[in-house]
Every structure is written in C-alpha cells, then in structure tokens.
Image (cartoon, rainbow, N blue to C red; front, side, top):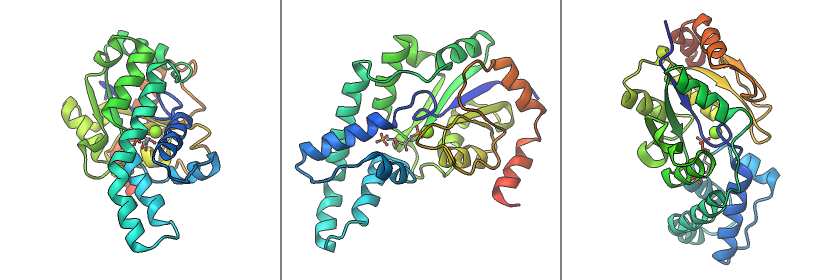
Amino acid sequence: MSIEALVFDVDGTLADTEEVHRMAFNLAFEEFGLAWHWEQAEYRSLLAVTGGKERLGSYIDALPSSAAEKRRLHERVPELHAAKTRHYTDIARCGGIGLRAGVARFLGEARSAGLRLAIASTTTAINIDALLQATLGAEGLSMFDVIACGDQVRAKKPASDIYLLALDTLGVAPERAIAIEDSVNGLHSALGAGLWTLVTPTFWTEGGDFSGAGLVLPGLGDLGVEELTRIATAAPPPNAVQALYLGQ
Ligand code: XBP
Ligand code: MG
C-alpha cells in the first residue's frame, strides 16, 4: 500500500528545541520570583510528562509544600506557562533554534514527491508558528496541510489523540502514513494510532525503549524520502505493529 502522508512531531524531531524550552521555563521562574531552576538532568526526567502546563503541574505535585501552597501554585500555572511561551517564542523568532540536520531537505523532497505533510505535536500552535516561520520562512506553515497540536486534544502523548486528529483531518488512513518522532511518548502515541514510525532520538530522549518503531536513526541526515517509504511499505502492516504495541 503506498504512502500518502508524513506526520511529523515537532520538539526533538523537526528541531532540537528542549534546551530552549528549559531556558524559557527558567526565565519564567525568575520573572515570577520563584526559586526554581531546572538543570538539564532534572529537565530530562521532567520530560517524561508531555505538555508544559502538565509538566509544571507534575513538578508542583512533587514539591515538599503544603496542600494549600500547592493549590496556590497550581492556580498560577496558566500565567506561568504563558510567560514561558513568550520567552520561548522570543528566542525562536530571533533565530535561536535551527532545524535538525536533513529536515529542510527531507521536507522539500517529500513535497516534490507529492506527499502531504502534517504535524502532530504536544507543544502550542504559537510555538510551532514561531519555529517554522523562523526556520522555513513564509511557507513554513503553508507546507503542512494539517497542524494538530497542544490543547486541541484532551489527552496528550503518549495517548494517540493527536495522531488520530491529524489523520482524521488529513483524511488519510494510518497505513497510508508514516510518523516521525523523537521520544518514547511520541512513538507510543503514533503506534497507538496505527502508524509505522521512524524515531530519531536526541540527547533528551536517547536510550529510551523504542520497541515497535519501524526504524530508529540518529537523525534524518541523508535519508531519502523514497527510501523511507519503501522501508515502511515493506514492513509488517501497522495493525500487526499496533497489536504488538497494544500487547494484543
Ligand atoms: C514536546 C512536549 C512539549 C514541549 C514544551 O512536544 O512535550 O510540552 O516540551 O512545549 P512534542 P509546551 O510532541 O512536539 O515532542 O511548553 O508548549 O508544552
Ligand atoms: Mg518530540
């Protein structure tokens, strides 16, 4: 069965963004007078929770504070996350984040091959807009037929909601699409939606259990679109992969 669409994750896949997300969180903590500072090692473990607001909530829950203090802090999460997003988009818009190696070439090749492009990401639309316009210019957004992201779904990765939304909006069956991810959460989200998945880990996600991935590579590098679609279509049907993932 031929491939019609490629569905890309954003953070860690299109660009290695998590160091800038970490910096933006720390800038927001300073702005709010919070004595919090996420070092890389701590942030790497906090990334097990997808979604910046959910990550903040999980961090607060683990604080040695009173229930009343935790309630007060939870109430501030939306404004704290909005400040973090402002810091992140400021850095992205100034060109502080580049695409990962091979991504721009791969996107161009996919479009020339007539494949449709989509995004399925946990981050916010404003972050995606800032990153894509800064790295790909005016057509950075228009090259994607669908951008499914952030709070458009209730359950974030590893739940499959965001990939199911992307496929539904594209009008493409899972077996006619390939997912490209960087993390275990992202892989499980794509597998649960029945997509054959290429995983390209970063420092933040390497060493994860990528069982069920169709292919794991250090990055897109020189991989050809034609080569990827050939590998994916020669692979076991997604329902077999999905069954493997779902333990059926
Ligand atoms: C990765 C995430 C996001 C980012 C932070 O998303 O889990 O939460 O870490 O961005 P992706 P926000 O699915 O693109 O890998 O603070 O906007 O959530
Ligand atoms: Mg990711």
